[in-house]
Length: 193
Image 1 (tube, rainbow, N blue to C red):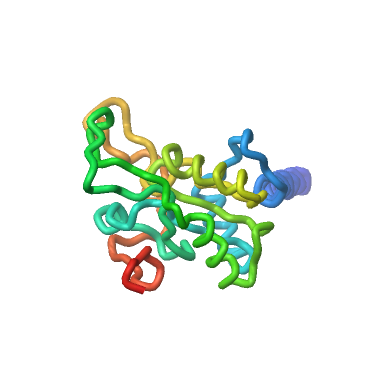
Image 2 (cartoon, rainbow, N blue to C red):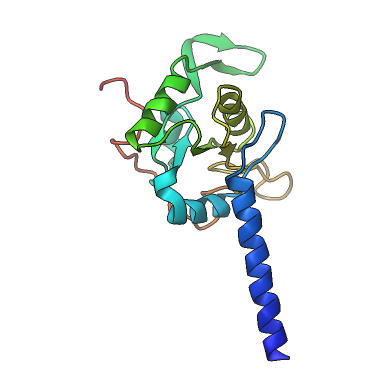
């Protein structure tokens, strides 16, 4: 009985490993919504850091107030905040796509000795507004292995109860993974260098 249970456990681990690798390494297309959980990305970075580029695609001011993880290689914003134009429909400042996003991702890959065929993982706040769109944009521009952290850094907001509206249910920050409120000056997106 013990031997049978051990074989099942090993088989389950093997199936999980194969499915994780299949979701990370095959080419994906812009119409696929291939994403990885924060725990899958954390494991992937532990095992494949040299062949993977992990980027936080949030505006650096957001990171300054919310925090990030030093597990990312760099902060390369997909959308930047234009503080000169108010977006009344969304009740916020206008967001615009970083015109240098593709060239900055290519430079980050080159710095690691990689090219557009490498795995690129993007992470935003919740996975939806910048994570998936940035991965799709990369895919459309030849980065065939681009993917994203499905629940982002902060995760989704709770719909009911005392913590209604708070982002406390999933995401990198809420999963016990390493993060900090302190920014890494070498990784944060800066215009002064």
